[in-house]
Length: 128
Image (cartoon, rainbow, N blue to C red; front, top):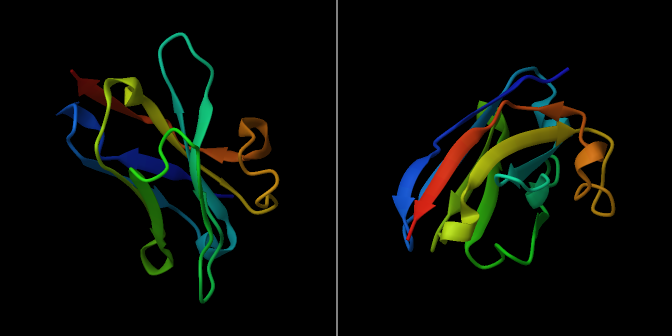
């Protein structure tokens, strides 16, 4: 079982940057696909980014809406995954959630219901 705690959210002006962190518990963190999802007011939770489990190389996947602006990374020695968000837009305003699952892959990790473990979220507000 994995417990996840997000941090790093806040208020930023459009065009600015933020880095979110997600600290995970457990000694098997490196075995999990880690993902970031977000939920804007009145909208469904949506996929933002995911990164494959530990190894020599990682595979990262991004939603089209954030590709080229956001970057996901992980440090398995620290049990932490990051989301670097640049060139933020007002439409990026949402609660951002960290998620983990050991049994998803590139064909399934974009689906919210496929991720087993979730943090409580951190609010990102981008002002225009």
